[in-house]
Image (cartoon, rainbow, N blue to C red):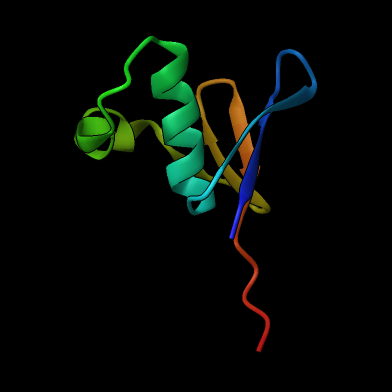
Length: 70
């Protein structure tokens, strides 16, 4: 599974991660701040992630939520 993260300010794809949508926007936000210590992303930035109708946001980053198809 890969998740594309959009930069809402630029209106373009920012990065692609092998993470859930929530984890991907948190990672994009953290890395944009120069933080590469992935072990602490959840504890440092998890509270900034917001669920929307169609995905997740964190700062200026958005990713479409995972769609489960049975």
